[in-house]
Image (cartoon, rainbow, N blue to C red):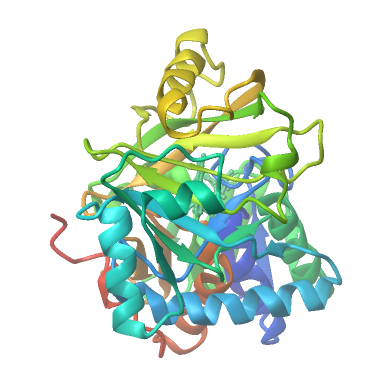
Length: 380
Ligand SMILES: Cc1cc2nc3c(=O)[nH]c(=O)nc-3n(C[C@H](O)[C@H](O)[C@H](O)COP(=O)(O)OP(=O)(O)OC[C@H]3O[C@@H](n4cnc5c(N)ncnc54)[C@H](O)[C@@H]3O)c2cc1C
């Protein structure tokens, strides 16, 4: 007899959500996390994450985003806390850039409300931007940000409220799928058995899922906070949207309004310009040349943003070659589900990924469109 119905390994963004959805469905859940709750050593920290619906990566994500937005609202309601803020979002670049053209494509395919601004209109409405004449902007009022630490904490709290047994600083050393069904998981404190296993190891996926041989690379990323040169007024959330800017060479930066008051500054980062790393040995220091690199880039895009440097932090992306997620049953062991490879854009999906994982662990299938994320696909 299994003690638990489901064991969830990794209680970061995805695992926390899965533990909550499973516990809310009445499953007996054991959650095992390597570090303390809401830590800063994985991929779900740094104060803010962009959310948006006109998805330039692929319009196939839009139905999942619509469901995610519903669940973000439900989460806020269930914990009685603000987690999501819709500030509007600007997606700026040359007309043929992925950031602009891809957003427009998704909006047209799914009939999503938006506005198109030429360089002059962009400068007039959002004077912190200094676009080149050939740049255009896609504006989505429904874009904004969510708070990652508050999200993880909220899911843990709700999961525990529904009876989940969440254990911290208890890393999983091994897991095995038992021949007759069920699983056994071993930690330094003992071993546990259950009918189902859900693996959400983030940047540790190459270790915990080594048997799958997924073509995953882990990259160190840097987030920067600056005090804008002319003060935060122009960057206040009521006036300033979140943004992604792509230059003619395909380099993307993204950033946020000054969401933590006058002293907190505004966060900005390069999207996928990291160095390969190992989560156990990653360099968590940010170096002066990295800060200078961001300053140099901002000089032409958002010239007043890079005033006084406030702070910086590292985070990790877990990348697949096609930048689509890996979500599905383990190809050899149907009692095991996996969710990893979120490729730097997973957080906005956290609530719906939890729902999908709960579907997989309870019924073996899901009604959500997840074909794009098949662990066995040909990665290109
Ligand atoms: C700088 C940065 C900016 C980002 N910006 C955005 C954004 O704007 N919008 C967006 O949608 N997405 C964004 N993302 C991506 C998003 O944050 C990630 O896709 C998401 O957080 C991944 O969640 P996860 O649960 O897979 O990983 P994590 O939250 O890291 O969780 C994995 C957990 O597994 C635990 N674990 C690992 N191995 C074991 C083990 N053996 N035993 C027990 N526990 C284990 C880890 O300790 C960790 O807690 C960003 C990511 C970064 C780094």
